[in-house]
Structure formats: structure tokens, C-alpha cells
Image (cartoon, rainbow, N blue to C red; front, top):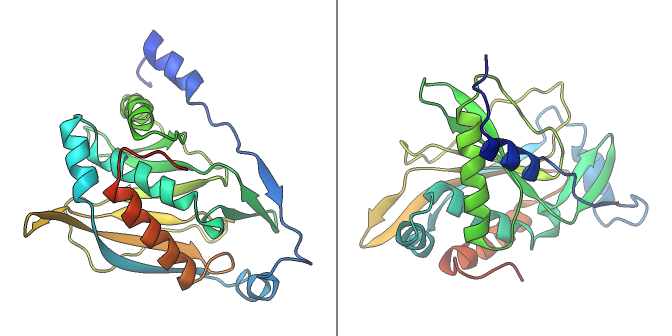
Length: 233
């Protein structure tokens, strides 16, 4: 049986309950990506991805200074960047394309018994507020023995492989289920000449985003990592 929730965890569950973001349906007749969308939407494997190395020194030090989860701090800065790239906010829902105003996060969380849980993090503009709420969510799902997984489209799916300095990665996917959310994975953080760097993989649905949009996201992600105390503007 799942662990009994405390009053604090019940309050957090209510506060962090998934609330669908406001979305706007894109008119395919006027959408500049119509031809690309039609070409890629039916692919058996429509995702494409890259693995790159990023400098996360400032966010890493900020998290250490404030005793915050490094993973959740990195996740927040990634969401800040994603909110500034239109193509990272578009999703395919029942064959239609929607653009969402707010994109949240979801990730796998390791449990003490060696299994994993799935956590959901509602986006907040400021890193400290976001990590505070997300930390409660992590602790909540660690105490359960089932799998809750938010199935809404208005999120990015994150994972972390802190044991590996990877150069490539693949993901498990259920091809019978429609899914167009980006997938971002963080790897092992290394000290390189006094700077903290880590591998990051980014996979996106090709009907919604091209390599140029991934490059745009990465540029903004670097800027966000360099200024962890700045809110999304």
C-alpha cells in the first residue's frame, strides 16, 4: 500500500496538482510549418536529437550556495529557456497543433528501493520558488510505491544520468501512444579547469522543431545557466 500522506504532503499535492496550461490551436492553413508538419507527423520515429556539452558552473554554484537540488535547479533553467522558444511550446494533440503559454516539467525520480517514480513540477518564474515546490514533489513520490505520470502535453520530459558522461542516448518510447513533448537528459557533471560541465541530450518531434530551434534553445539555455538568479522575462 502507498505510504500515508502527511498534512504537509496533502497540501503540496493540492498546490502542485496538474493544471492544464492555456493553449491556442494553430490554424494549419496559415502555419508556416504546415508542409514540414505534414511530412514528419506520420513517421514511425519522428524524434531527432543531439548530445552536447554545456557549462553549468554558475547554476551549480548557486545551487550549492543555497543548498538546493542541483538537478532541479538545472531543470528550472532549462524550462526558462524553453519558454522563449515557440517551437518548444507547441504540441500535437489529437492531430491538431497547439501552442501553450506555460510549459511544466516531469521527470523520473529514484527511490530508495532501486525503483523509480515520476514527478511533476509546475513552472515558477523564480528558481528558488520552483525548487522549493519541486523538492516537496520529489519527496512525495519517493514515498509511494505506484507510478503516477502526468499525461498532459504541456510539459517537457526530463531525466538525469549522474553516473555517465555520455556522448549519445536513446529513450524508451511507446509508439502506440501519441507524444510530442521534448525530452531533455542531463548527465554527469565534471570539473574541467575549474568549470562545471555536463552532457545534455535534447530530443524533439521533427514535425514541430528543427535543428535551428534546438540551437536557439541551447543558446538561451546557456544564458539562463549563467544567470540563475534572473527570472524569466
